[in-house]
Length: 146
Image 1 (cartoon, rainbow, N blue to C red):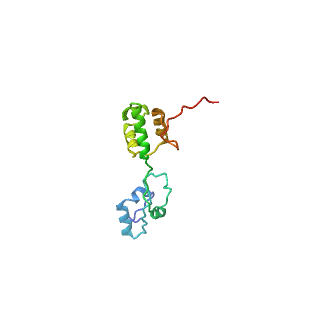
Image 2 (cartoon, rainbow, N blue to C red):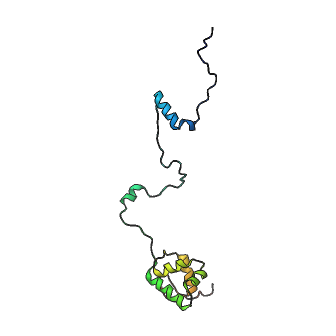
């Protein structure tokens, strides 16, 4: 004798993880009275591979305003005078050192962020030292190597 009202399921597939996370599946589990654990992970789905080196407590204790160093105005004046002695415009000097004209403008106005590579290029073109204690002195060509 068999019972026609009962159903025997031979194979039942487990629901996929993606379907278990849907709002409908969560609501159905709530109706059935199952335990539901929902938590959002920090930085989930952002593909961040690098960790910030300063921790938040240290940043909270930081009171001073952090800014980039600027080129001193006297260096800007030296660049401007050296450029004029060579008879160059800002755009011409920028083209000679393979930089944008805005960089020369910022350096002469004292707004630029110092970059030793750029300062070295400008020194070679205008022939005046921009770094070190003998700032503003003409550059001496290096002698023969020994």
